[in-house]
Image (tube, rainbow, N blue to C red):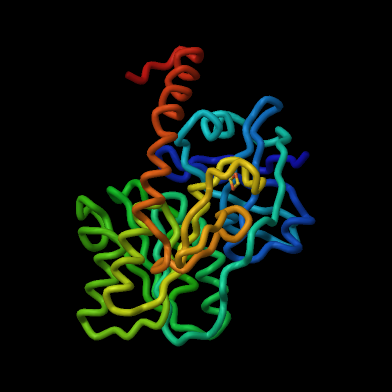
Length: 279
Ligand code: FES
């Protein structure tokens, strides 16, 4: 069991979890993930590692409260103990490309930080772009800005940065003559799909992180099965990093939608037990 050092809100429905985990902090690499179990009866929740302090022995994660298990995790407090298994998954491909574009949305606004930092240290020019519906949903900007040569914000309502999404920032930079050698995208599956398709339009290779597909991250439930480059892969065992241009996104969305009614029902049921109202 690992002690929670801090659990705070960073944006509506987005939380930062910091746990005491010296063994994990010593070995963690960009792109890897953890499995968190919020309580004794809780499910395993796979989540991207968003940072670590090797000296202090702490590891941080950003998560979106999007279902029953993440709701339970958000209710824990500093001093509580949780199961926290990490680092898991293959590390991100980090090398010197020249100019890299790194896009984050949702939990990925926080979780792209280790990749941004590693790409900068590898000698790349780093362009970072984050997206949200509105300015009050953006967070972690200072950290990202410090390690980026260029930093862009995109909001759907135009309240901060440019109006649009990460993919629109990418389009506009390329149209302005910026030369980009590789892209990395982390966020919801839709964001990763449209962003990697935008990169492919210009023949730019991209990497995506398919953590949102995972359920138990054991390699046994099969829920994270995905076709990449015509081959069957499992996000939790073979990933989470995959070349975005080779993912069969159509199949991925079809499989993902099969579980949504069950998760919605479980969430409603738990909220009713708590006395909340979600119709
Ligand atoms: Fe169950 Fe990957 S999440 S096999």
